[in-house]
Image 1 (cartoon, rainbow, N blue to C red):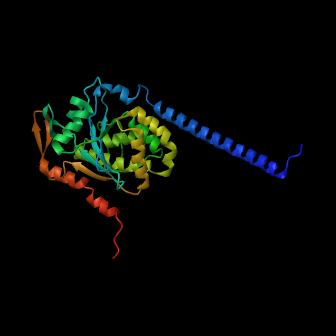
Image 2 (tube, rainbow, N blue to C red; image 1 turned 90 degrees about the vertical axis):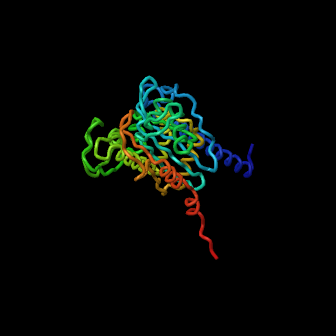
Image 3 (cartoon, rainbow, N blue to C red; image 1 turned 180 degrees about the vertical axis):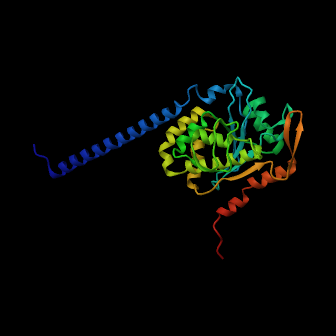
Length: 326
């Protein structure tokens, strides 16, 4: 039986289509295999379960739903476990504006003297010990009038591993003087490229004339540089492993879709630098010794005014508008 030319052409087209579909299926399969394998490798970095499993007793985080396109994420860094009397070593609020795609970062110093709901006057970092992320949220709202919608708590044991995935070539910093006390290593002065464990020592060092002020500045510096690494093109291939490590070492109520939405916005606006603020602001506090130790007693009016001005998105929106032509 002889086939017509038209039938032969149709047969060849079907074969080509079959080959193309086969190649696509193979590529998709390889992609899925890569994602699953890399994700599991990141998850396997933790030897003792995920941070969420370790901290299951912290209870519910009762942050409201975001409004007006603005998301506030409470960032906590701690060595604490649920059976230890740990305090939050780092306390920041990441503010993300969904319209301008800008990220802002507010650091609240650990010795800030605040009224913790139900517990009276304490250092800011005591809120975490007394009631976990939810009490930290309540304390910030009570004292500064700012509510946070989500939280993300980072296990410092996992911080170096996440850094090494994100920035395998290290992060360059300029170390002003020798750092050693309290960080179990020695960091020499000068421009240095630091990897995971070293970078953790750099952001945690506080035994100098600047005390916690210097540490907060270094934390903000490193977060900004890690953001630059995160939005770089070469980081996209590390995304599945990074998500696995994040699931192991970050306890958060921020869902994956919201994370990806924020990540996409930052990629779209990757040249934008993170703006930072420290609470207390300059000339708005006094150092005192009280029953709980050395504290920073704030002029709350000045700090709330500075915080509101910093987070005000009116100027940010004006910057993104096209100039009017008469």
